[in-house]
Length: 221
Length: 268
Image (tube, one colour):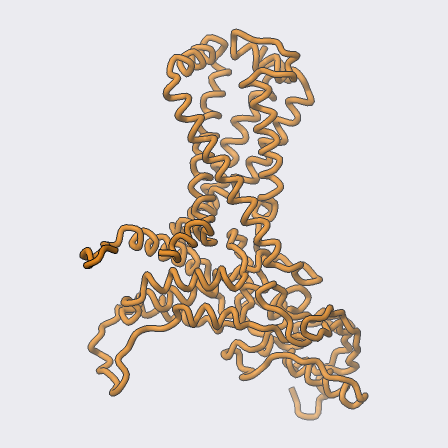
């Protein structure tokens, strides 16, 4: 049927939103898992290095996760860019006086926080996963030593902390918004889900931020 | 108020949008020396137009009809807010007592690509009509009216449908949305028709067709700002958007796995 082929190549507005929501859920789940793993830093070098060794001993698990994350990130960016451009065009400049009654700061800054997070992800992968230029090309055997060395740099830590606070803002809107997009929300649940999203966002962000702060203050060395 | 007490009036500065279809528009500045506080916003606009006509100048075109808040015709963005500063009212039900003496009021049309300006404050809202044509109907047997009690409707369902049916199709949701999205309008229509027993035969087709018509009309995508709910003169809630999302996904899944029927002679 020509109609359905056409629909497949031009996904509907809600179709793109569902892609946004499901990939967002995958990525939100990942950051919570990643943050929990990072907290092993506080249990000492042996704990985090053992965790890293366990991950490396399970390449099937790691590569499946990486593949899912890569596809989710790509789809999330594609949907976000497409929706943002379409929405800009549909607004047609908007009224000469901008009045906002309810839209949260997080909701209004999603494209910007998203772009900073993309830049952060690229830097973060080069920094720790590929251990590239930022660490002067040094290779570390111990994850613990690598993280401490990395966060000893104030600019690196500052960028990391700012990015995680922006992640908090991004998740604060995104994590509650995805329920609405998947149709799992009503006025009774809206406030509860908004609070849940806020709690989730702060737990993830503070968990991540605690590590560079601990390194900078000398609690981890 | 005693009959002989003069009514409080306001001196107002107005910045009103002037435009001809297809050409760029601009704000015109006018002053009204004495607007009674009991006047509605549209009556204030009538006063402005009468003043312009007396001066031999062209009146501003604006949409209006019932002037009692139920027809959905009036459509002005007042100081950046569709239907003005008071939540839950239409422009015609907005009274001048909500403004200050000496205030400058900016009046402009709905701003969205899907609502092109026809003249001054009048925009073309036929995008909404195309959404309604696509699925805003139910199948009924014409002829003699059926017995009303043949189709029982639970009270809760009837209430929810009625809440959604309050939508007057004015377009304030689109005008207030930072994405120019019509999801609140389409959500209200899909909710209203899809939860009633009378709307079941077209349930899936309606959700798919109305969303398609909405996308084709050039409306934006919902990103859950919530501005539409905050500006809707009928206080329709985001519940209807969640339901629209649910109805749409359900319809797509049902369509995807629909039975293909018996093979016909001569292949497909």
